[in-house]
Image (tube, rainbow, N blue to C red; front, side, top):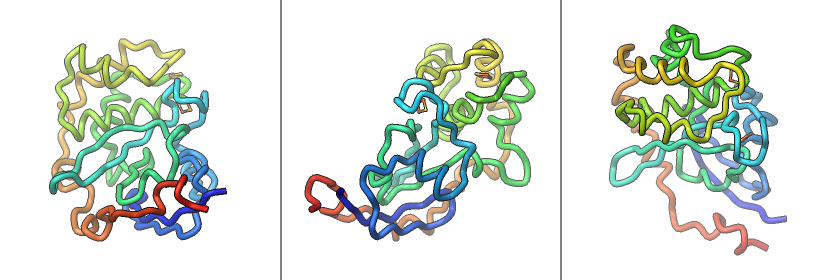
Length: 194
Ligand code: FES
Ligand code: FES
């Protein structure tokens, strides 16, 4: 079994794992080690999007965000990055994407909802225009089998009308990032580890 040492941010908390089993997926780590069960397991093979979370990475002094399927992402790949889960995006009030989803009736059974919320959050934080093409692109990995996509697409189209300074520009936490800059780190490549 390969082992690794990683440092990353889980939402606001700096996590250091010294003896990580490199087969550990992000999804299993969240649900088993932190009880962050808002990230759902559906297909467990990268097809349904129920397990979507967002990763922030510092690149050329800017933070870029992208969504990931946590069921097929190994935890060691988060070294030097920030993982943002659905539990974290609500502060004193709902994040604009959450409020928009509610107001557009975009959720029925709710199983897909956290994953779709995180794909919306990815769009929102990257300030992606909610054109039909962009919505299809950002939602393409998220399956919903009961609401229908019209209300969900409406939620995306309306999300920018919910403004909140709290969620713009000052997120996540730039003062923490310098200590997380990835170093050349042989431990990150599991094939180099005995
Ligand atoms: S659980 Fe379906 S994509 Fe991860
Ligand atoms: S709300 Fe039920 S699967 Fe999407």
